[in-house]
Each structure stands twice: as C-alpha cells, then as structure tokens.
Image 1 (cartoon, one colour):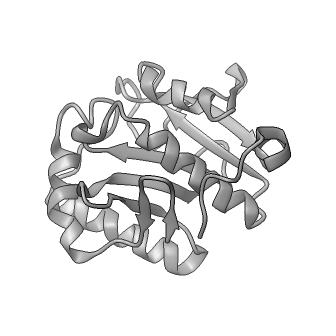
Image 2 (cartoon, one colour):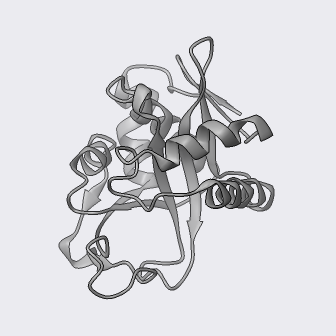
Length: 193
C-alpha cells in the first residue's frame, strides 16, 4: 500500500468491481481507451491481483480517504511482446470523471515511480494515443520524454483501427533520482510504502 498526501494506492477489493466497471464503461473515461463491460472489468481486476502477487506491483486501486472509495487505478505493470518496446515496465492511470482536474493522477503516478525506481526498475515507459493530450502532458510533467522513433501501431488492435496509432514516453531511474532526490527537489519524497 502506498500513501500520498491525499491518496491511498492499495490492492483491489471485491467491492471495487461495481465502481470500476461503471468507470470503465463511461464514454468520457474511455474516449482514448478500450471500454470494458462488467466481464472485462472483472478480468482486468483479476489480472492486477495476479500481477501484484507475481511482481509486487500492479495498477493499484486509488482511494481518496473520506471522499471516494475508488477513484480509479494508477500504478505499474510489466509489458510483454508483442508490444514493440517489450520487455518493459509501464506506468498508467485511469480515473473516474469525478476525480479529474485535481492533480490526483500526477500525485499517484509520482508515488508509483518512487516505488518502482526504489526497487530497482531501471526504466518506466508510458504510452497513449496521440490525441490523448491530457495523458501525454502528464507524462511530460513527470519528466518523461518522447522519441518519435518509438511511436508505434498497437499490435493488439486491427490494422485501420483509429485507436491503433500510439506514442511512447520513457523515463530512466537515473533521471528520476537525479531530478527528484530530496537534495534536488528541496523536499521529502512524496510517497511512502
């Protein structure tokens, strides 16, 4: 479990299914993602649980204590072939609409990066559709960089699908540690385990 000033990133609970399924069916939330029906949402949560058991991290459930029991999902996940940049560790986020515009995704992402890099992950990637400006702007605020040579067609989507083009951002542990160490930032780390 990770805690930040306003959030808790925690393992998934059975009671998270209904709000996660509702959020994952919201056309605004999934404008740049593949929507999930209830069966898909159940399978997604089970994949996160299995991934956390195997790797010690996943896209965790994000809770805003006293405000919202499930605000969304933020965290880290291993990426395997056929993704062209695999093997890699991805950072990602998906928040319910009522949690937008408050800095929660960035706060949770910073805690996730602190967690991953402290455990020896050498590099983290993030990817999205080029039209998802909110997401790639967050990647840039986190210090991630894009190389046009890394742009790719999502291999799990059929040719011609408008969601197939993706852009990739990268962030090394060295860069994160250099730019976010207490001496560089002049502050304490933003998250603890």
